[in-house]
Amino acid sequence: MRFDSNPLTQQLALAVNLFPGLAVQLTQRAVIGHGGGWIESLHRQCCQEISQAFARLGFQSLGPLSCKFMPGWVLRGFSHPQADAWAVHYVGIFFGSQVDFVSEFGDGSWVTTTTHAGVTSFDPAHKAIYSVRGRPLSEVWQSHQAAVEQRGLPTMVTGGQRELADSIRRYFKRLSH
Image (cartoon, rainbow, N blue to C red; front, side, top):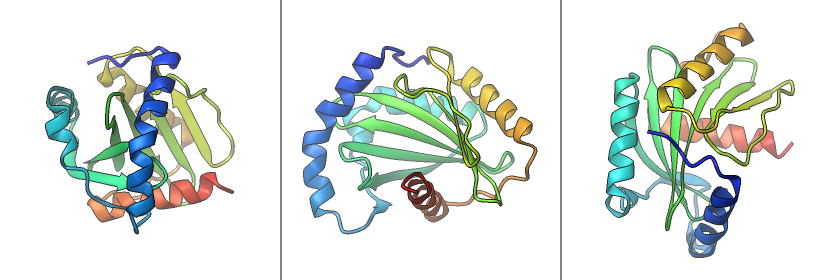
């Protein structure tokens, strides 16, 4: 499975998905929480392909989440217990699909490897983000594992959906500072 590496297409997806998502954002009380299972029916083939690819890589599904920080998108969470890593499949209400692999460390830092074309790679002290465009999911995962190994710190243990939601909350809180 490859993702559209065209930044213009992905920016269009952000804009198109934003408007109906604003209604969700305004009516949702929780910052992030369980919800959005309907997205798997709306985008059945895409969700099935991603779920199967993640399963081949050793990830387990945690279910969908909705997030006020990303109106118009459903976050499908996955966990890799042996690698202590998260995977998040972002699916737009109308269209758009991207994947992040995320590892969180005990010192509060993260390594994120994304398929999003609009993200440029950078490596500040606490938020290392690497963009891998136009590559199969298995290669994106290998790139993530190499970045985590290069960091040389022990990762935090992953868990279920609640722990993923807490990790996302910490991530967005850190981004805002």
